[in-house]
Amino acid sequence: MLIAGILAGGIAVSRLDAQSSAPPSGQTAKTTLAPSHYRPSRFPKRAGEYYRLVWGVDSLSVKAVESGELIRFNYRVVDADKAKQLNNKNINAFLNCPEHHVQLVIPSLEKVGKLRQINTPEPGKSYWMAFSNPRRSVKRGDRVDLVIGEFHADGLIVE
Image 1 (tube, rainbow, N blue to C red):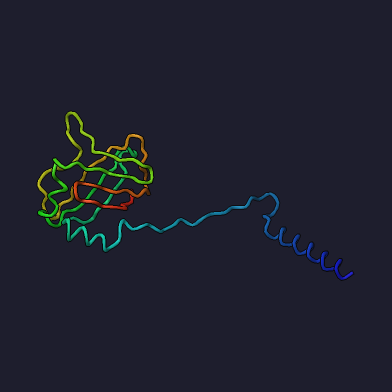
Image 2 (cartoon, rainbow, N blue to C red; image 1 turned 180 degrees about the horizontal axis):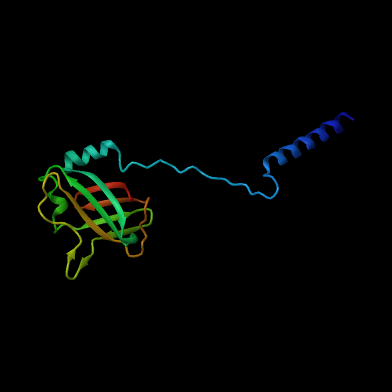
């Protein structure tokens, strides 16, 4: 008799729990998630100091532009002598995405030339180069590695 009472009480409690979590008849349950305000940092502060001291550049950023057809790398020159290698037209630049196993290059257009600024760097000015992404394999949120001769910037996040 005691066991029958315990089992009956357990069934009644489980039915009450099920009824309290269900929405009233005729209505559907709405679940809304709050938008996340978390934004991953471009790279650690220590890495930014390294690029500034060794390579003479800061404010590194990588963005998907033109509906993802191009990936644009931007940087600001702090020390023109150290940053000369980044603007050297004889040194090829590559954008590697290890996650998707692709390597992007700077396209050369017939009338325009390479989509890269090659003028002499000046302190305080921003420069860019664009990498062709024809299959749109590199997307926003991916981590990429930039290689320009001896210059390597690893783990940059595509915005």
